[in-house]
Image (cartoon, rainbow, N blue to C red):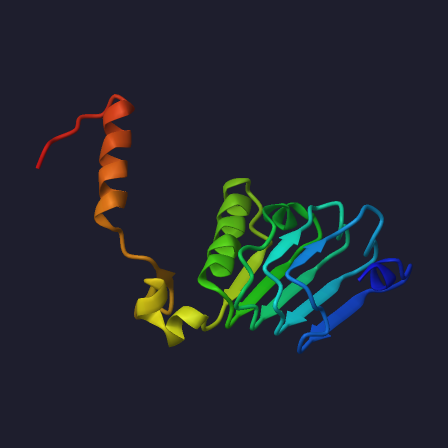
Length: 165
């Protein structure tokens, strides 16, 4: 990847069917300075270490069949030129990280970022991942008893009233 990253005029990079191999991708400063479009399709990548300085011109990020990817680096959302993230048939945790990036950017007033979610591996194996899809196509993870207890404990420590039921 260092060879690709050092190409001074590279704007489009499509990594298909294990073109990228390895469980971890750590970017170095000065790589991919003009990259606008990045497609990662079917890889064994698990951990991706990057921030907003690594892809300063990135506009479109597409992840397909990244079933081992733990998360999209959160700093990717900080790239000012980023317009879209598209995630398809990837791990539920990668989908969750895309949702978090979108939520974080919207809370900062960045309404220009669009995130498109397509079927995930969870849809194929919903019980394995505990993810559900509602009628509108949105994905959610039902609250567990532990989640409800944590929420109650937090609201009780925030000065709110708590009740024992």
